[in-house]
Length: 279
Image (cartoon, rainbow, N blue to C red; front, top):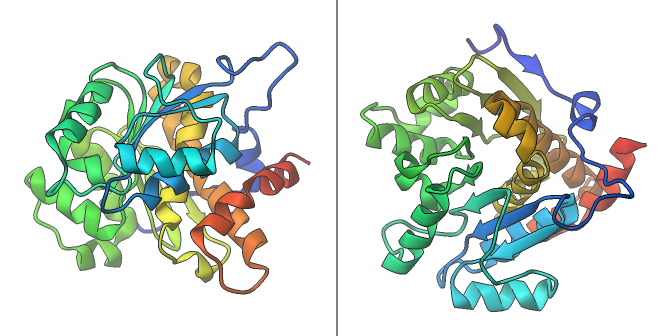
């Protein structure tokens, strides 16, 4: 299963999933992303995810997380809206720890998952995956996938998943009934319908703190801009997720130029990366 049936997803494939606004578009038709991420313990995750979403191209971001991360988000991105309202997609869980999450934070996540809107679920919300009523893509690394599978009755270690990531991405998609983006230098995307896509990062410098938060923000923006396609066919989540991985990897290469990078560097490189891809 490591190789059989897997399609390599690259720049040419990703280009078709970049939504370029037209003259008739406005901030609402371009997609509104609702974000519940970050915590007092990990506030930077909210900043990184929102920064990546804005720079990937979305009409509006509504940040509805905790007050401390909210202040940092607004300090970085004053155009972010902090009032509740309609959204086309949710980004949930980055920078949250279920063991220390407040009841208010848990309620925000469950409320978002209950409205049937497509959702990107990152590490800190994987424990409430069963509350989702809409199409879902999860973005775990090996340890996080091990935890969510164990919680659902499958005993597997992070080392076992790392040894056979393609196999476990498929097993997770089938057993959990969601699209799985399993992070790694080679990212594996699988959905319950049998789609299997693989993306290889362009630089190993991408293994840095906050990189996953940036990827989640990219993916959240793409889901928001393609919400109509996902409503028509949930299998659209797989190519969208693989496209997010392509943008993430290409932005890292651009930001790195062969040297070390920080996560925010990757987010800041996204507009030029997308322009280059479209050209």
